[in-house]
Image (cartoon, rainbow, N blue to C red; front, side, top):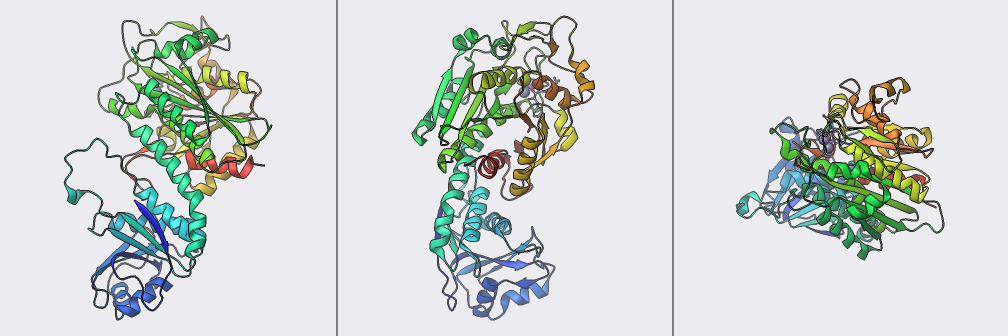
Amino acid sequence: MRIEFVSIDRANPPSDGAVATVVVEGGKLSTGAELLDKVAGGALGRAVAAGRFKGAKGTNLELVAPAGLEGARIAMVGVSDKGWDGDAAEDFGASAYAAVKTSGAATLTLLLADASGEEGARAAFGATLASYRFDKYRTTEKPEKKPSVETVRVAVDDPAAAEAAWATWKSLAEAIFFSRDLVSEPPNVLYPESYAQRIKALESMGLEVEILGEAEMAKLGMGSLLGVGQGSRRDSQLVVIQWKGGGDAQPIAFVGKGVTFDTGGISIKPADGMEDMKWDMGGSAAVAGLMHALAGRKAKANVVGILGLVENMPDGNAQRPGDVVTSMSGQTIEIINTDAEGRLVLADALWYCQDRFKPKFMVDLATLTGAIIISLGNDVSGLFSNNDELSENLLAASKATGEQLWRMPLPPAYEKQIDSMIADVKNTGGRAGGSITAGLFLQRFVNNTPWAHLDIAGTAWKKPSTVPTIPDGATGFGVRLLDRMVADSYES
Ligand code: BES
Ligand code: MN
Ligand code: ZN
């Protein structure tokens, strides 16, 4: 999809293709809507007066080819009366795109008279996010089912300012799409090695990428991560990504669970819905997307991204419930359930991260537990942390971006749920507080480093979508949030 920024001729507002304009909750026409209303002999005002559409957020009304604007499809898009700002502009752009994407119009003009350049850029960002589609494997879709909009034209008073503001938002959208694409790829295409190669390709953006295979991980003593991949024909991989934009500052680090397919292993999952477990690498895709975003905007920070990539399969060589493995930290782990594999991957990835990089902090992201979906549903991710300052910075970025987090406790009293009879720790803690005992397990592999864990099992994908900026499927949750946290709290 192409994005263009154009100026507004107030006597001759855009009159071809789809034209979206704001109606403020309560029914008040925006300046842009009034320009169109004038040319169309009051048709917009009459339409609002005639029916239930009164500009409520999330609603819209289309007027097709009204007299005076015969060539146009006017989409009146509701925007909250709580105040017009960048967030409202983003919602507007996304809702407008969603409203007309398959209408037949090839061009969508977002008519934003009286909006700033920044708001124009945010409208373009919203429309772009809403246009995400993973269709590389569709070969027979009928043209009338495909989106028709090819160009989004943002009409603002100062198109040069909007164009300038667009650069950063565009690069963030590309990073989010990169992350969504990884999550959407089928597991026969995206497996640890092919995934690692896609990350390697990011070197063209100025990122440094190292790939460790099984032999190297064995040398490092990563028995916990390697045990998970043991039943797979695919080689496990640890990918280390570095962005060095911060001089000699101590790095900050992000670690992602990248289970490219989670069958559960010998503790195999039920068949129903198992295909969803291609999404079990969503945490790592968020980290990869974040690194893409940081490189895209040349962030002034030193950032490490670590992806633990494995496939969890049942096999004659697969790990058994009852096995004891030795992690890189030296701690032994009794495997109770081979389906609690994400924490086993992260245990070694987190240890490696702090051992090698001595980061200022580590944040891990993982589709770790079904229990977090029971606790927080599909809009809110669980935040677990040993550090209040880091948590506050994450919560502030959460508030600013709308990617919601809720801090969960790590009560020491629950530690006994993961004490093993024969090893240092066991990999499941029973049904009670399942997301918390998973967090406590991870914490045992963190050594005096400020650390936070985001359980994104409920938020890495959405079926069905509930907001226009996130179409059905992979959300890219975390990319925007963490990019914002780095920008606001850790850049010089
Ligand atoms: N990948 C799953 C968690 C998950 C479940 C993510 C549903 C997204 C949707 C994880 O590896 C898993 O299987 N966790 C188990 C842990 C249990 C065996 C202690 C779970 O949540 O049931
Ligand atoms: Mn599992
Ligand atoms: Zn899993």
